Image (cartoon, rainbow, N blue to C red; front, top):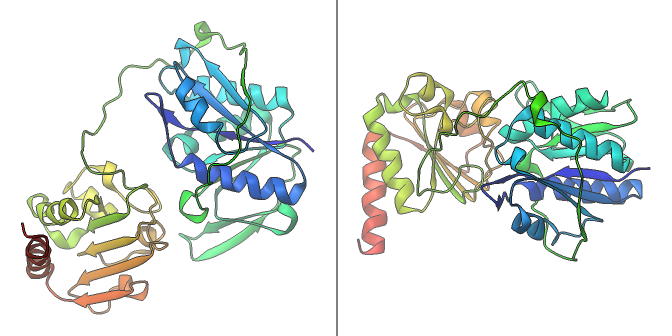
Length: 323
């Protein structure tokens, strides 16, 4: 049986730690199937990324390092990932279920004529089946992919990040990719400049919903997040109402997070939002409606007016910190 191939994520030469959830998945499946796992790094000037990837016990770290891959494009990255999978005889190709993974891996599956399971949260007996949520997480289904090669994206909040251990050999892979065949072209990447941590990696997330009533009121959420060194999040309803950019959306169609502390203010708790944060270690809900569904998953619930509670909470933390 072929090894498992993990597609690593990086941006600007920085290894994305979310990849480590996919590495843990690969380790577990490899242990059940009696095979190994490799890691693939694609980019331009990614020596440091490859060196970081080599710390997690993979059989090999394959590197495709060319100017053509300086910026992520689904067409080129999918071509190379499928090419490496074929060349190495990989039986499973996986990545974390991030924006990039969700964009790239279905194209990899098409190139490999492989079945695919997305947002996998668990592994069935013997590593032969995969468990994934459906109906916004209300139902877990166990799926068996019938094709010889299987493609999987892994929900990062459901697998622990792999611990460093072992040194993997790094091997350059000579791709046949021809940039002249490109049907896509990179125009620009507009980054959201913020000193706050990314939602997916943050230990603290303060999120606001439609109950904030206006864009300016998100300042209440931002002030509390900054005091706690946390990330700011939002519901789709808040994003649709243009209170905040969609980069901050948490949920089934947004980002998934599992921080140590999640505080939701003015959030009713639609199942689509809960799917993105219900694995948080401690959930605090603030809502005037005592019947709000978010209270069903909250560890601590406060039935109160957020416009009174958030300023008081922010001031209490300032007093505690001596600010």
